[in-house]
Length: 467
Image (tube, rainbow, N blue to C red; front, side, top):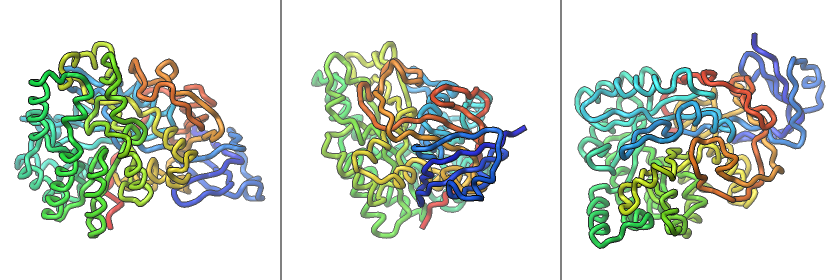
């Protein structure tokens, strides 16, 4: 039996509207909205009434870039689907899209089945999958068509990591041509991995082994060059392109230029690039290893251009690229050789709060916060309006958010399965209070009331964000 729920007295914030409204939830979906205090709203009765006076009522966050249990560099990301989705819920995210991995020599289906097995029955919130394509061949291209039909409508390729995930320009072009036909969206890790490997080898030969050199060899110009090349390949193929984890102002400029030409080219950035910098990579005593991710953190002056890109819509989405590795025993694998540090940061729990801080700090508006964190990722990856908004018929993925609460981010209090926080000691204004996933309480007034297995696999339609 589903419980009827009414959320009363809050400010409902979506990507398009802000309205003082009560929200009626029935059978796991939003049934109706009505202005607070009106006869229509007052007439609603429900078994559960949530008082949201003085709070925001926002859609659950959609994090379209996570890596739970990802194998990397001889180890695994430290969050399982159970711990990672629970932490996501604590941070106000109610849907993740994770990456299933095709290994070279294996089929897409094998990779997808393996990720379904990891996630099924373990997730606290709803989830979908993108497919990492590591081995482009005729069989893979046919499989892409089948996956699109089943609701796996986006495919990630890498211009980096030669020998692991890397695709050359010919493989990328073939996959883009296929996606132009089947409606899939190619997601690109845009860094010139062949050139970067030369710089890594040269740095290590000079004895430059500390974590900060990770940022120095993965040059902004090589991100920009790869972004430009990916855009031109997509243009040749007549396919849309989504560039993941954009960190460099030079790459933003390439995206802006392509969008000014009317191309269906999209960009995602992540909180680490907005709030952290090469100063963190340079922290002494190997502490900088905590901040090793790819694309790497950039000097602080890049941050202003990323915020500008988010305001002008040259960047459309903020995801986390959540890929945590513990400092002890995992990041430490790279002591004496920065190239052996597992690449990735924890962040799935922090994204919504950090972006609310950006509202407080004047970088973005409240509605833009919801747009880049909820609505656009849902539209980009074919889940809107089921996800990403508060409207009749949408899934009742709803967050009661206290915009006045203060918190200090710390590994001592976070719920991610990792032994450090990338934002340790950062003071924030705003905090998640209550979270509903399809009408069920997952976080209830700062207590976890969800359970593994509530989260359902969510097939997706094709990109809803095209010109």
